[in-house]
Amino acid sequence: MNSDKNNASQDASAPEESGHRDNAQRQHDNGQGKQEKQDNQKGSDNDQDKQDDKEGGKRKGPGKKPLIILGVVVVVIVIVALISWFLTRNQETTDDAFTEGDAVTIAPKVAGYVTDLAVNDNQLVKKGQLLVKIDPRDAVAERDRAQAQLGTALSQLHQSQVQLDLAKVQYPAQLAQAKAQQAQAEANLVNAQADYKRQRGVDPRATTQRNIDAANAQLRSAAAQLENAKAQVQVASQVQLQIRQAQANVEAAQQQVEQAKAQLETANLNLSYTEVRAPFDGYVTKRNVQLGTLVQAGSSLFSLVSPNIWVTANFKESQLERMNPGDKVEVSIDAYPDIELHGHIDSIQQGSGSRFSTFPAENATGNYVKIVQRVPVKIVIDSGLNPNQPLPLGLSVVPKVTVE
Image (cartoon, rainbow, N blue to C red; front, side):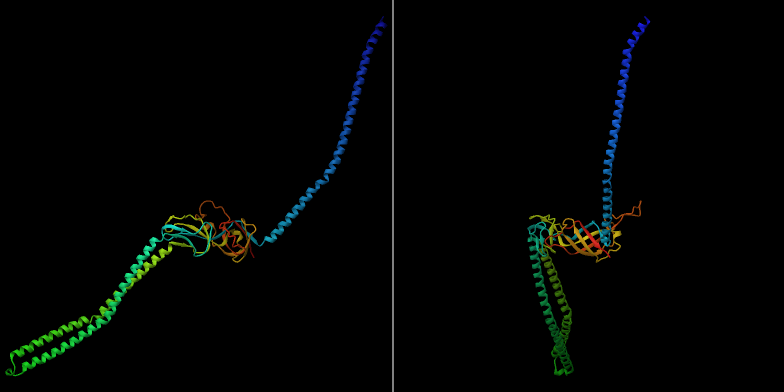
């Protein structure tokens, strides 16, 4: 019995042991499979590493080229910089430079209505060319009145001159006549005195009282005539004073003539001012007048810009050390890159731009901060200007000054 039970238990445990062996075999197989997979994975990883090493080796080779190119670029830049410094070591330049020129405001000297407008905007005009004409009727009337006053003054001068000439002839004759009458009166007095003495000295029986009285009356009459003649001579002796009076009248008349001439000249000038003409060759700009406009004396009609320009360049004070008048200058224009001007330094302003500004800096107060000053330099253009292509004022330019 016991043996049967043992056999039965052995028979029952046999399948269990067989199942355990199968599970162990499967686990062993799975372990071997995992190991093989791991080995395969390691092998593939090693192959991948070898492939990466090969590719990395291939990439490391061209990685040196950018460094070589960068080195070449740096060397080229240094060489170019040295060449540029060598070529420009004797040059000073600035972009703070502009074209300048003479620009005047055209204004009338008389008031009136514009009756003729002979120019347009930006038109080229010549010296003396008519620009604007103002109604001249008031000026013409003033001119005619001045001419009439001059005619009156000339007539008065002619009359005074005639009176002077007459005085120079008449007054000496009157003086001579008065002296002659005085001499005659003196002679008559002498005769009357002699006759009276003769009548008084004769025998009373040889004359009569009537004769004595007549001689006495004749004596008194001769004495009175002599006194009258002396008075006439005294009056006639003032002939020089009378001539001088006539000369003074002539001089006064001459002054009136000169005054009338001045008034006529002023009237003619005012008449000429009704025609506004160009003071020099130039271009009409900023026209602000139209036909029929009532303009006042001194009011702006337009501006006239001269075609003769120069360049004002504001160089830093550190650039002026070797800069002198007469240095050659090349000027390029931003608006016209194909135009290159040649000129020279005319002068250097004796003061910085800020010194002559409306509100100059006051460095004696507050905290001082040093600022590089700029000094205006006048550059005269010698060649390169195109008469058919004038340069407006205020264009930006870049001058290059060749210094010693």
